[in-house]
Length: 145
Image 1 (cartoon, rainbow, N blue to C red):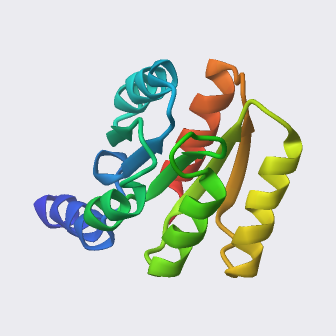
Image 2 (image 1 turned 180 degrees about the vertical axis):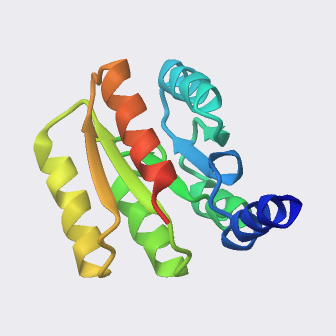
């Protein structure tokens, strides 16, 4: 049935919810992390952009408008809390993954900032993370509407 076949892709296009269209923005000062996450994102069919400096993070976020944001909490120029606050103030909806290799307190603080902005779309991934955990989280987030 050609009619039935054509309807499904049109529905997917309207919703824009295929994995191929999902965009991931990675903000982490460690180039090794952004390279590994980018490689995994590409394998999962995600489009991605990586930033190793938080100085222009908010501007890049506004321009790129990602579906998923992976944000390191501890960075030299501007810490993740400041970046998260600025990003949440834009009102652009994204699923957010907070990462840190330091104290859990930074991650809890980030979750508190997101809660303050009434953004319930926050996940936490403590460094060092396992590849399987990253794949599972990105797969889950990229399949949500």
